[in-house]
Length: 483
Image: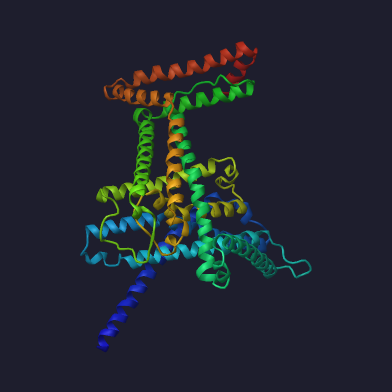
């Protein structure tokens, strides 16, 4: 009997060590990728300073930003890893090599991402910002520790301010239960604070995901539609810029292969269209589920039952579609976020992004990525119930909030799709697939020469038309010298 207890304890010990080792290897890989991304965008001049103290402060802040970005990538991969693990266990239920993949490991990953997300948002990223801006208390001895003390005091004051605001908000919403929550800091305050941050992130995803879809359709549509000189330009500088971009686009299209020119861009547009339509249909179906089945509401679970059943009615194919849609929505939200007028200045530039901008980008990406699992489950993209603290949000069980959220997302996404998929884009999409027939039958070079000659003549015609209206006779010689 005692030997059985020892064997059981040894198994539990080995399972725990194995899970911690897998989590450590996963986060180490994500940390390396995050470090490569940040070093690609950071401004190198900030780390080549003669002041050793400033260089040390910048390196510490960079490490904290790298850790936060790796947590963001981990939050994005939570649902895809969980869905993929479930399908692997369904395909190989008795495989010896898949015994390490279980619900305990997935649950540990979710809890670890939740903990590190709280830690990064509440402490690490604010510490990194205050640390880079600190100079030490007035009258104190200058040095690294003086800046650490100032940063710690500022962080403490910020924590007290946020604690007071959240406690007042909780008191207004929950009444007398908020009085006891002040003494239960770890079990109530931090999850409640993260719930508020997650709700804010979900609202940002609701706003910027349709905008990102619209932006991607617009960019692909510009690559698809023939370049034309805009008739709305007034000044010679504007018409020069318009014609220069027109000729540059013509040159890029000429250098492209016939397959890339006639099939690449249309296929990208078609893939975006299919993914968006499938996403809208899944959300509409989830709206019907909410009306007729109360179990369709998102809910939490303590131990994810992996390997019991597929999370999609279409099996492995449906699970693959869910993973693609989750990643597609995340990319769309990031594109929409950086395309908005409020946050366009945060857009990182290679080798020219300041440390303050990097911190702001890490905060933004962490808020968006930590809300992605809740966002995907609320829309019904997947039926994987959120484990751990991700499923403890009070508003997830509110039918009116979830139903209204789904309706708004479907409406906004449909409106953006209708607005960006113009008749010009549809006509060029059909034309591009029609031109593919010419390429297949060997008429591509002849047709391409005629097509590009038509583009260049239209550019020159636009310039002459502008000159006849504005009298800018020197524009032709200006273009000859500069284009």
